[in-house]
Image 1 (cartoon, rainbow, N blue to C red):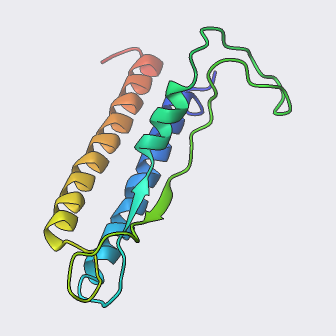
Image 2: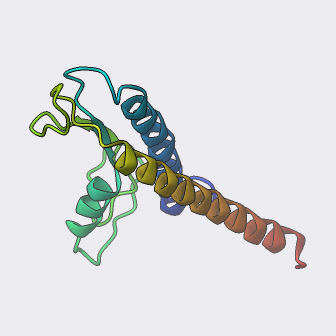
Length: 136
């Protein structure tokens, strides 16, 4: 029984880690809003996860009893978040490309997303507790 090692928890763990990394990256962008020649960065996670999940169209899932076995069907692995720099745009006269209003909106969006992920983990843990204790 892999309640906490299942693919849903692994995706939530990856999403929470990506949200934490995104907070740091956007905060760094805000801190360098007036730095000449600074180029903003962003975190890619949801796109990579969607690509990985979209590429798996097989309906057959093989059970792996050893890490050296081939993966058949959906993989339990979750892609790691990656940081990409936007080096091609210019926003200010000093060759900086940080739009402070956009970065603040991204911070607010990331906070809401992080809160949603945490609520989902709490909900899943409550459901497991209810199943173990046998009461609501």
